[in-house]
Image (cartoon, rainbow, N blue to C red; front, side, top):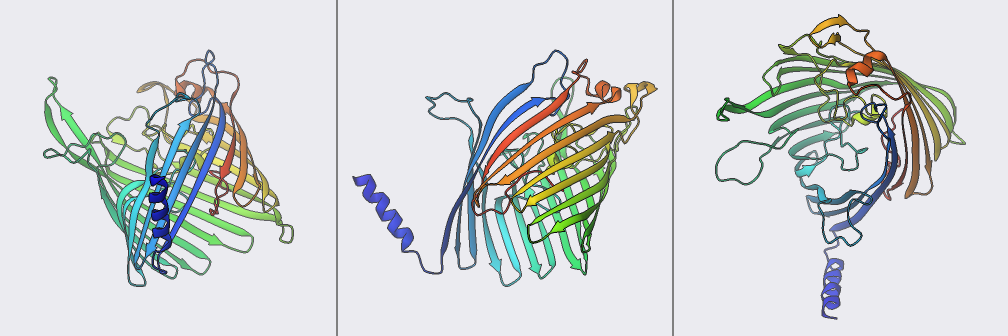
Length: 438
């Protein structure tokens, strides 16, 4: 009874907050079942496919008062059955975001804490929404926004913990220091953005006896036009260009780039019914390093992108794989038919090839054909209500002999495919579907 009384006092206290304070509680849940038979890496002839169900449950709370906006989200990400039914505790609960944003007048804001960095088409900086764990950064971000002009700049500095001595950073696949500046504007039918990202990675060099001989930070820079979109009545042209230079974490000089262009055409449209048919034809080139080149890194790295949405849904490229290799050419066609504003189907086709030379034995041997094969992705989405939607898909990959050798997973199965069904519970969120761009 005493505990109930304490809880009642707390609730009454929240109700008694000043009239100008705003407290909002929101959440989401994703439940996805998957069948994997070549997802992420082409599957070998003797391997069995995998199947599982996993979820993300996220609780979000925000509090606004005066010039302060505080936000925090906590999430539980787990595979069903990964803990006992009589479980006491586990390591699946984590903080996804925790930040405070302060307003300095009409146009300036400062956002401090763990936050998502989600820009442009999420090719280089994305919140990784498809992956259940998603992605966020410990970052300080200043924002100037006036009309169509938006200037964001900030930095992050990471350490393993609150130590009394030493600065060696050991968290894998993470920058120790990073700085960013991005400007976006609009001119008539053109929307464009400019981006600079300076990425510093910790390196440690040791002698044969395990003694540290040198350590520090090596920086790689990315300079980009990540958005260059021209929108007409029924046609949208999009382009992007990224250039990378500096040093990678191993000390090699970097000279890499990413170039993409696409055209989206509305072929038919019925505004009264909310139906219509659209198609996108596009091409992307991510530079790569030839297998016989060892002194320079020419492989473009889309470091923090939501890469599932780009080069095929089977995630064989740049989703925890294919970095610092021979790069990629991707010619694609995406088509979507909307039966109504709440129901659609989409079909995608990709033709993949290497951007750099592949030799049969790494640094020697004969040059192989650069074709990697092709992929077909079929997706369907249905909004059940304002809070509930269902999404599902099937993908199949048709591998070439070159890609079979490149994957190095033995003799491959004749069928490489992947399928999923996902329930999306997202009240008060406009993103009813995930990872399916047109």
